[in-house]
Image (tube, rainbow, N blue to C red; front, side, top):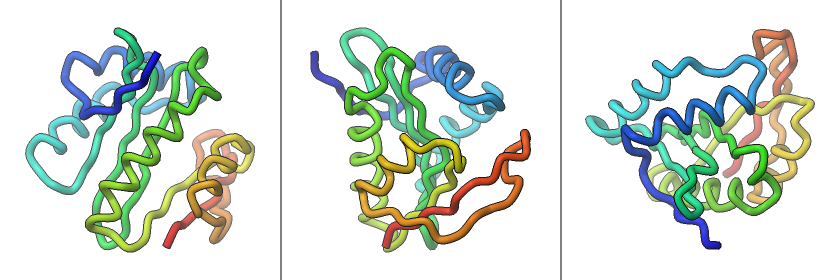
Length: 146
């Protein structure tokens, strides 16, 4: 079954939030996603994509345009991981960002090796360690793609 990447819609937010809660130990609040969706609708500095397979939302991606692009957050449903959903979301976000930004950055937990491998496959490299970046004290890597 094919995967469609499209802009997030208001009706998608409950599924996006469910994915968020099951993906991260310190998830963003639903308000964060509502705010991003409003910002996407009223500005040209933010992106909010979702991946749909059949009738199911299987992943999301938040990103920002600026002097440098920024991948804010990406998550995929547990049962849809390792099925190229993240690859498709990242590819589409980078395509959009590349039209306006020469560099893209992101932060990823030092223990999240799977995500690091995905980002490396798209040309990201570790620039530095951000000590205690996450609420639980875990360090993050700042990764960049030029």
